Length: 198
Ligand code: GRF
Image 1 (cartoon, rainbow, N blue to C red):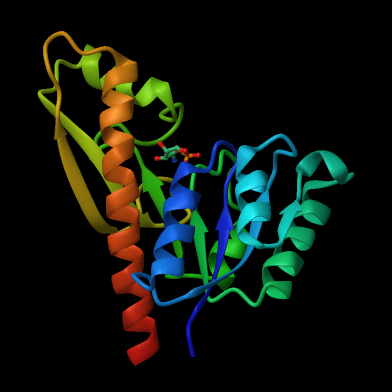
Image 2 (image 1 turned 180 degrees about the horizontal axis):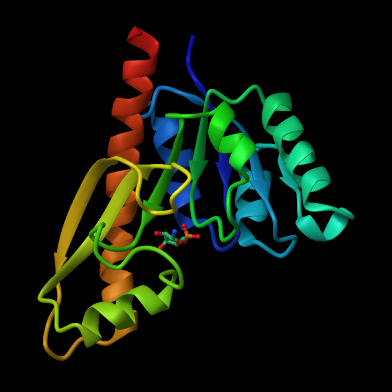
């Protein structure tokens, strides 16, 4: 049986799109059973609609306590019968109980060569700004398993890009994002294949 992926995304969802395309083309042997977002404005929702994938907005704002939110999130992941949770630009912390229950089956993509430029405050354009400020001559992206310590789980794959002297954070971001689309698909294809042969 093909594994079921549940994608978590908060924004544009370009990584989500490349995963949708790779599932359609058969490069990733899986089914995407749902999208979960915390952001009702996320363009990722539009992408899900176009692809005929159910999308749910689950936000802390809708609940009185964090525990209620956490419970609800887990319930919806279960409802989608997730085998694998794919974080694709999800801008919220993953609750501990979800990490525990899906240990080794939550993947994330980070727009830098971890362990460099990871952790608190390292998201979006901030990452690329920090890379330039540090005078790096290369950057890239990393796909890793999610553990309780954010951005510190085992790395499943990395792709590198050059960083030039006259680069701007936006240029580096664009260059890295292109590699993200390729890398995430590749790592997910391998990950799903291994799950099926287990
Ligand atoms: C990507 O840069 C990803 O590495 C980071 O968030 C961004 C999401 O972009 N975690 P998109 O929504 O997939 O376009």
